[in-house]
Length: 394
Image 1 (cartoon, rainbow, N blue to C red):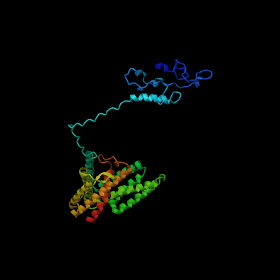
Image 2: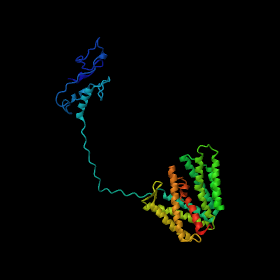
Image 3: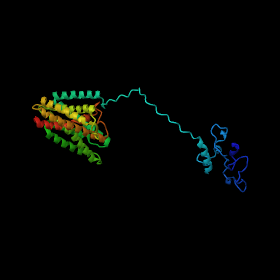
């Protein structure tokens, strides 16, 4: 049978050979039967016994896929008129199965080249630009030392400027990350007044300035809509205590006769504690100290901070502080290491809550001013109190 006999002429009202008339069992088109009612099926070709479809390359290759050559069937066995041809679809599927591609044999993975050298282990990264950090640290040290030993009032101004910049960084991050609008103007004015009052009037002046700053924050926020009032003033009072009030204890240390030596001891012990924690933790740290708060801090680093701070404390109390003793320096160094670590963890908690890495970008290699004040601020009242207990208020 020729494949052309199964082609469907455009004018045919049924599916069948175009040169043999209606298929057997089909209703002829005429007055009694409209072309639309004609049977839309065709007889299946007789498949002889043996392989359903000869393999590729055989002489009968032109006859394979007879059920597909008529054209009107889709892959799911549905005809163009929507009728499902189950028997035809089965024949087409059966004829296609012998031609399924055989699974390819997977090539074995090549063996690694034994002569290729193993990759060198990666060195630990410090995480910051050490060159910039050292340069900025030296520059800050020169400014601090110059103002501290030549004109005390100039150092009070340095403290006040650091407080105002720190408040600006803190309030800006609170607004950006949490939508908290702590009023900066009364905080900055009150913070500077707090530092000056602590230097001039001592603890009494510092407490009075703190109370007035908190009152100013409450009143200033009243000029805006009441939504979020409690949230904003709470953040403002916290900022006033956290930055300027704690910094006031540095000014109170400076007010003593040997105030420059006391402030220098405070700065040296805090810096040495941070440096010892960093150096020992970076080199030997394996056990996390507080992974949920600050993953970079280790117990080995804490041991380094305590060791370095106690040694520096003994030297400072013996040679810098009048009437000081080395054993007092050991206790002072231990207290400084603890307070500096807790202060660093406290600001890390704040930054983690805000979802930031640094409070600012003012100091290359360090971050912002608040990123340098994090361990200094909580350490200031500890050093002031222990020095008063050991050698008096001066």
